[in-house]
Image (cartoon, rainbow, N blue to C red; front, side):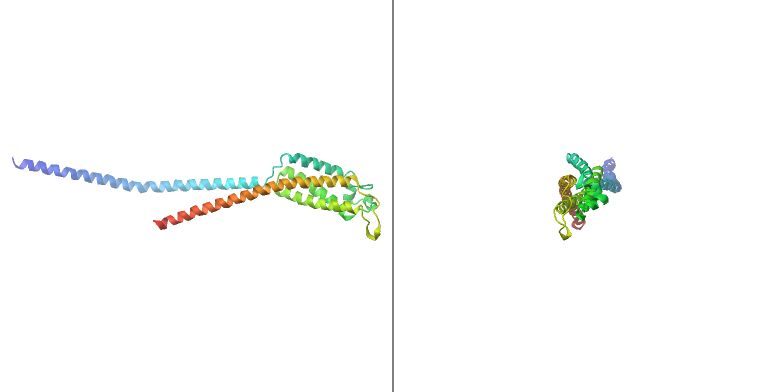
Length: 238
């Protein structure tokens, strides 16, 4: 009768040992399962980064496209009217009986009126940059074309002033021009001044936007470099 209680006590001592071993096995199983989920999280993160990089490239392309365009707004109507006035000035007398088209084509009437070279330069700049360049800039709304039209119109204004001066100044040998300044020269020069003014305002506004956009890009680049530097320092700290 004394042996039976000892057997019961022995059995009671072995039960906690079996329970503890089963708990350690389950903990080991949990720890072994944790590394298996890590590669899945890393791969999904890389996929998200790749998708975000693709969207970032699309956003940069759209941003560059928008940055290269102009929005003249109400100035587009003023520019269109100035272009029509410039086209009409070619039909009016540039000087004497020679119209703007005669000066452009160097016809016999232009030779009879002794049209100077500066008048021809003015008319060519009026047609190429004032009319064609302005129309192309309005249709395409490209900032580069508007900038080219502005430069050509500005040079054309100087040429128009010299053409006006040449019709009131004696030439070589003190020979006076047979005719003075015509209505076509005056109206064409004023139209070119209007085009120069409005294209300068449009180009300047877009240039200011470009500067602000470049500054924002520099800030983003500095922020990305700072994040990359911190990520590189973390492995060394560990």
